[in-house]
Amino acid sequence: MSTFKRYLVIQAMVFVCGIVGPIFLIIFFFAPMDPHMKWAYWWGLFITYIDVMIAIGITASTPENAGAQVPQKVR
Image 1 (cartoon, rainbow, N blue to C red):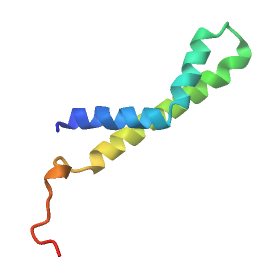
Image 2 (image 1 turned 180 degrees about the vertical axis):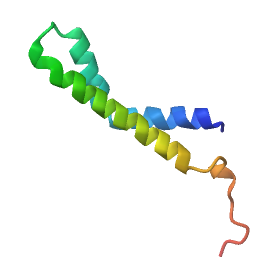
Image 3 (image 1 turned 135 degrees about the vertical axis):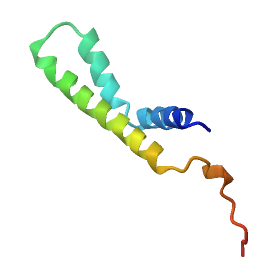
């Protein structure tokens, strides 16, 4: 599997587990303008950034052909 495809799969799973960041951003942009909603913007950006960094880190730490590594001698 190509690196980009692995990244997209991992990113999708990370967003399933960390969906609260994008939800905060959606709430901020679709709610009426309220100065008390700034927290949703900043926390949404922070959580979404962390989600993307986690997905990039997992993608970088996994081998290219993880499924192709079969041990030669299994006991």
